[in-house]
Amino acid sequence: MAATTELTLFADYFQIHVSDADSDGDLSGAWTKQAVADHLAVAHDALGIGTAVNDNVSVTVAVLPQEPVDDSAEFDHVVEASLSVSLGRLTVLGCTDYAPDAAVFEVPPGWNRVRVSRSDVARATQADIDSDESPEAIEKIRIQVWPAAELPARVVKRWVQPGDDLDV
Image (cartoon, rainbow, N blue to C red; front, side):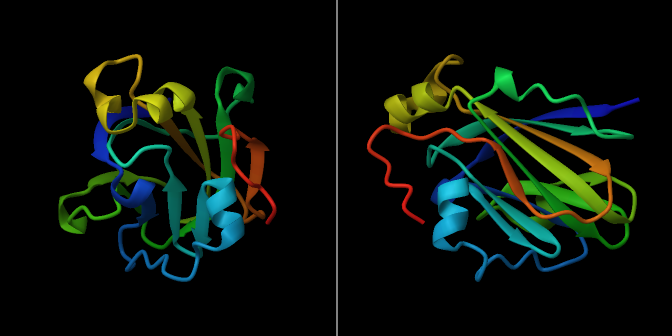
């Protein structure tokens, strides 16, 4: 049975974070040119999810018992990465949010796989700082988490903004 939670987070600096609640979630060296292009920064115990807007985003977090079916055709951009969670507590927060106030999710201790699926990216980009003013323009992010062995990060489906240079 999946536990699902809805959040609204401020994606300051165009990112939100998913991390082991018992770590410092340090992503300072993880935002490489490739990570920016992939909208995903990966550290051992933290992930930075790049967003299209520096504004509020709608986030759905689903903790699952196993890998979900691939429904990437329904989304604009989909990435996956592994995350080590030492004591089974995962936090999801805006990158400048106060960590003790973050949403906390119980997950199996050890390695977990995280799939991040984003939608309404083009509309949110076009609306820019007004993207959270209407439901059809707010960027939507679904985060699915399940226990799985460590695997390399991967882009399942890439969204490219017109004019972006992906020479990485």
